[in-house]
Image (cartoon, rainbow, N blue to C red; front, side, top):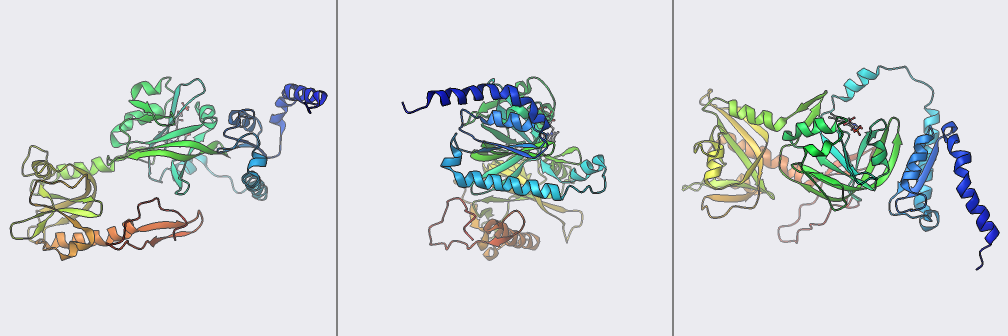
Length: 425
Ligand SMILES: Cc1cc2nc3c(=O)[nH]c(=O)nc-3n(C[C@H](O)[C@H](O)[C@H](O)COP(=O)(O)O)c2cc1C
């Protein structure tokens, strides 16, 4: 009732006509421009802000997660922070503008390629409800609390529009046997998803079967960065398994797991192949009748139906092990023709029903009677390294930090099992 009808009409006439007058001028905007909205804003949608940012030559789009139309009033601090960051960035860019020496773009790409990475397929659902995806190795973990990850998408990618305006995306970390899928999702094929088994996750984003790990994310922030956009995702849900991850380096795939299996498989027949199998801080041993302890080991890696081989021995005791990376290789002091090859691995639940199987806490391994001195010293190294990486955590920020040990819980104290907060120093 108190609304001024004339004023209201005038304002809405302006809304309706302003686009025709101004939209084409965005391309002439020389100054850096920030187009910001809330992820829940139905009037000024993230898609609209992203489209404007693309039209403006130095435009960037920011979508504030969970905010709505009145975000300047509802969350002034959040909005101001984002504007301040934008202004800082704009003023740094102008001071760095003095051109440095030109450099070779191909060489730059080659140098970047020496960084060994994994391979992911990043997926989303576009406006039409169709699944979209592209292969990416620019995946990076960003923050533990809140849980954030990022991936960079080229502005040239056909999927750029779909990803930069989406509500979220899923990152599927590929396994060694998913090279073919990586190739298809790195192509411009029309129906990339016909070639893989997938299902929608909790957020609807496509999750690809057989992946080593999957992070299902809401789009937290879209950052404009040169010829790419950085998609920062807030992890909503994730899964992972023990399969071997696919790697990528210098323009080619690398398969560390397969190479290591090939090494053990090709080893001379006398080779002892063993494994340190871990389950929640304990290592699996076989206790002999004389009270000494042995790691699972056999003649060669073999297969389940070769009883003398490692895989045969594990199968005979119904141990469902996941072999990981190679841990140690040494020649026998007494017989130089005999090589010992040991893997690291994991085993699911402690297996019962076999009187010989023992799970020993890592820090108690030193007390065990172990006949082979080489195995004993390998296990001492394992215990040392394991104590460091298991109870250490990286603390710091993007410019400085260090790995610090966390206090180990006393055996009698309740084990704190919540997420690690960055404030817990
Ligand atoms: C191993 C590998 C890693 C890649 N990483 C990225 C990446 O991080 N970001 C990106 O935009 N493209 C990356 N690409 C290229 C895209 O997968 C490729 O351009 C794809 O065609 C994009 O799909 P679209 O154009 O259908 O959206 C990568 C390709 C390969 C093979």
